[in-house]
Length: 114
Image 1 (cartoon, rainbow, N blue to C red):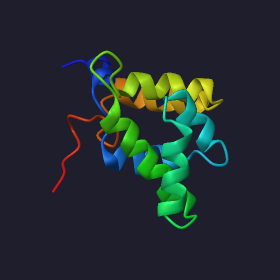
Image 2 (image 1 turned 90 degrees about the vertical axis):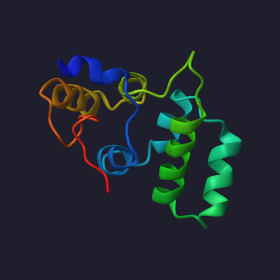
Image 3 (image 1 turned 135 degrees about the vertical axis):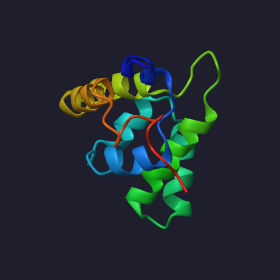
Image 4 (image 1 turned 135 degrees about the horizontal axis):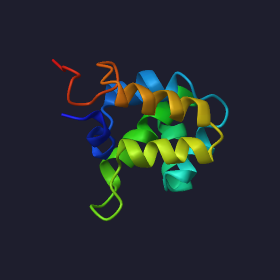
């Protein structure tokens, strides 16, 4: 199966934690904005996680991953586009290339979960 098809799959929690949060620093709110996460969701997560920015970012990404409709699915493609808009073009390009190369670290179908 061609990896190009993977871009229409949802990133897993593992992908979000290890590939996005680990590489997106102070611009995490901009990325969430491009993904359509409302400010009230972000604010709630910051409060709920007692200022732990990484956990608030992760929980907000999970909200995005769960909360989008079929007309606006939370897919790798949407995430890669948002990364580019949020000025993370290099990361988006790297992840897209890894998806195309069937890298098991990012290819959703190849990642095994317990």
